[in-house]
Length: 270
Image (tube, rainbow, N blue to C red; front, side):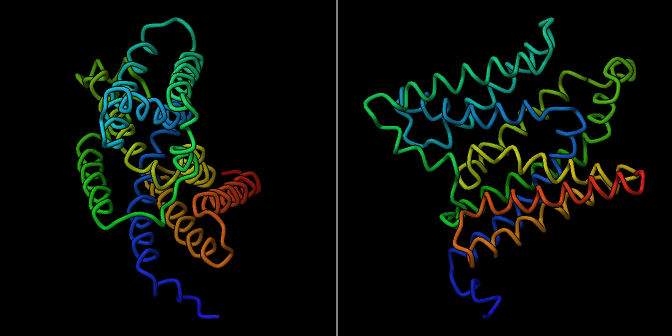
């Protein structure tokens, strides 16, 4: 069996390029999502995609990517504002908004029995990506690197101690909102090919695995990106030969890496 026969097909080449952009992006952003305990937040953003599509349908927006992105940005900013003002725990607030959001989306999209038209977004299909869409991912990747270079230290300070960060003249609210918006855009741009049901896993698992065995922030970022890229490429190849969906294959591999690193960290007291 020729191990590189999958590269003979254009759709596999496009999927491979998309994996090389999406996975390091998720690995990088996931470190801060895990560090800030925002797993519920990113999961809620993924679920809000259905509502974004539904709002677009109601308003007559033909491009679902636009309606999803706009709604996700508004949703992320609203979650940030309410989480900082409401006395209830953040995960409770996010859970309430996520449940309400997805219920509205399902109610609108299922009207007249039309939900089957949108069911593919639940699992995603990275094999359907086009060269033009790969360029969109590349632009988001460039924006993320620019943001990370300029704002990482400030964002880390806010995540460690918000009060201390504000005393150092760091605009904590602005940093949190910018990160929320960027996370929302990344999730929405990727969700068509990754899928609502598993996109949060791809964002969380590599960073969580990296945290199990990292001694410092540099290792934390390095291993998170390596685990994410490795899971993505190997998952794509395995899905081709085994004939299963690519997204779930990637998540299974990322989960296995998490359990291995968890055992490694416990064994060597990392």
